[in-house]
Image 1 (cartoon, helix red, strand yellow):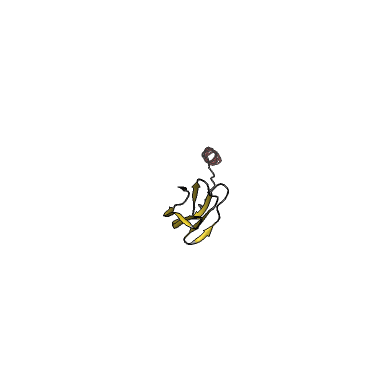
Image 2 (tube, one colour):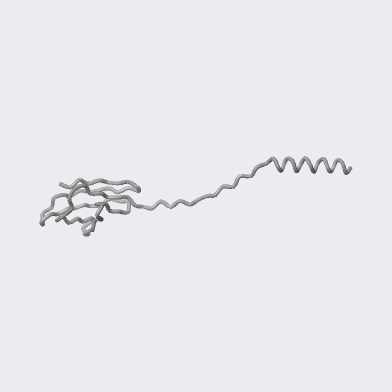
Length: 99
């Protein structure tokens, strides 16, 4: 009886030792709801508005914006030189070449 118990206990221990348990970590990745509007060309002397609001552009000529559709207007010397709708999508860059 003791021998049978010992053999069963050893089998259970061997099976348990041969099983591997893998741990994994689940990371929550938050994707920001932003895309980028990039201007190619000289911005000096130009004013930029999005949805009738003036904006300041970084020295890299890039704006981070929430995804959506925007009315873009660029003026130079009180004259409109560009007007268009731009659609910003998450993680993408929309390039605008300045005249």
